[in-house]
Image (tube, rainbow, N blue to C red; front, side, top):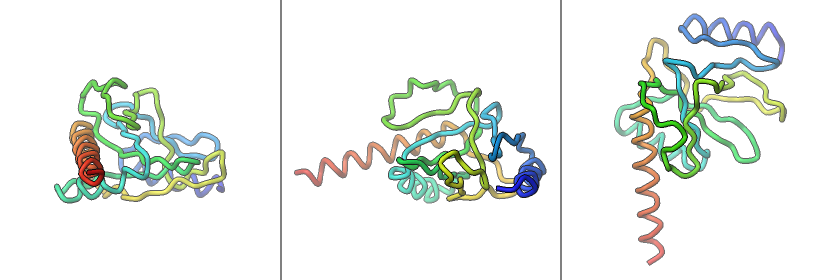
Length: 151
């Protein structure tokens, strides 16, 4: 990844009010207010995105490529204090001390971060509460379906 390309991408994020920084070969977004994030495995993310879309909620979503690919849903940290004690399996709520790499960041494994759902200009981020509610609904619904199939 060339520095001019990273700098141009970082400037585009800044024009939209995102307080990004460049670290190594990555553009990072701090999860400080108003930004937040919800991380879950890519295998669960498609169902969550479908559910959110059906409710009219568009959530900027990134894929973080790894041995187990993860998705990051960018949210408005609406002051909800879920912390790490939300009891949803395989779901992580990001802390204000966390940062998220944004496209076209290159990770240490040589893979590139990419958008599944790009942020829309001047579009508000959905709240953390809305996304956690959708994740909870989908996980419960999927577990119910698995239980019915096992019968």
